[in-house]
Amino acid sequence: MKDLKGAVVLITGATSGIGRSTAIRFARAGANLIITGRREELLGELSSELKKEYGINVCSYRVDVRDFEAVRNAVDSLPPEWKGIDILINNAGLARGLSKLHEGSLDDWNEMIDTNVKGLLHVSRCVIPLMVERKQGHVINIGSIAGHEVYPNGNVYCGTKYAVDAITQGMRMDLNGMNVKVTTIDPGLVETEFAIVRFRGDSVRAKSVYSGMTPLTPDDVADAVMYAVTCPENMVVAQMVLLPVAQASAMVVDRKSQS
Ligand code: NDP
Ligand code: 8X3
Image 1 (cartoon, protein in one colour):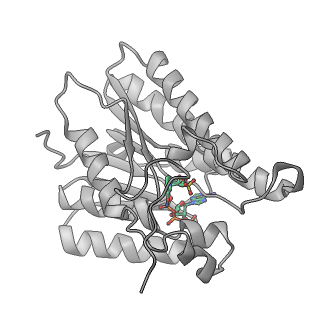
Image 2: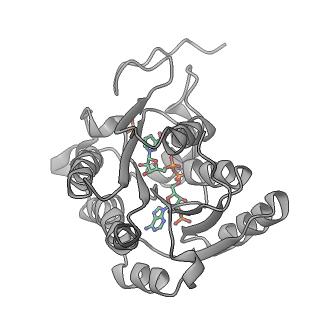
C-alpha cells in the first residue's frame, strides 16, 4: 500500500460529513492537511484535534468555493512547502430542496450550481496546474448516485452531479500522460448534514430520508477514498459507486417498518 506519510492533501468541505471523516482518515495515515470550508470555528476545532491526536501539520482556510478570487488567494498564499499538493479532494457540495422544476427556486439553483459545479472548477483550476508542473497528483471528485440517475424533484441537484461526472471524464482526458490520476467517488445515501442542509434545518424531514434503512456512514466513503489513493501506481480507480445494501438505485430503497 502507498505510504501517505507526509503527503499534502487538500480537502474542500472538511467541516462536516464526508470531508471531515476523510480528513481524519488521512491524518491517521500521517498526511499533512489543508482543510477548507466556510465555518471557521469548526475548521479551528478540527485543525487542533488533528494536530494533537495525530501529530500532523494542518493549514486551514475559511474559503467559500463559489468565490474564485478567494480560492485563488488561498492557493497563492500557501507556503512553498504546502504547494506540493499530492491529493485534492473536491468534496464541498450541497443540495437545496426537492421541488418540481417549474416551481423551483432560482436562489436554490444558483447555490447548487455555483457550489457543486463552479466551486469544483474553481478549486481544480487553481490546484491542478501545480500538479501538472510537478507531474504528480491525484484528484478525487465526490459525485453521487444522483450523477447516474435522475429522480423526481431532484432535477437541478442531479444536473450538478451529472456535470461533476462529465467534468471528471474531461479532466481525466486532459490530464492523460501527465501522471495526475482522476477519480470520482459516487455514493448513494450517506447520513451527514446533507439532508439537514437540503431541508434547511428541518431535522425531522432530514431524519426521514434514512428511515427504516441503514445508510452509508461518512467513514464508509472515506474508506473508499483511501482505497483509491493507495492503489498501485499503475492503476487508477476511475469511478466508484457506493450504495448502502438497502439501496438498489436512487429511488429503490428497502425500508423496513421501524418498531
Ligand atoms: P455535509 O453537509 O455534511 O458536508 C458538506 C460540506 O461542504 C461541509 O463541510 C460544508 O462546509 C461544505 N460546503 C458547502 N458549501 C460550501 C461552499 N460554498 N464553500 C465551501 N464549502 C462548502 O454533506 P456531505 O458530507 O454529505 O456532502 C459532501 C459531498 O458529498 C457533497 O458534494 C455531496 O453532494 C456529496 N454526496 C453526499 C451524499 C449524501 O447522501 N450525504 C451522497 C452522495 C454525494 P461549510 O458549511 O463549513 O462551508
Ligand atoms: C446525495 C444522494 O440520493 O440524496 O447525492 O441525491 S441523493
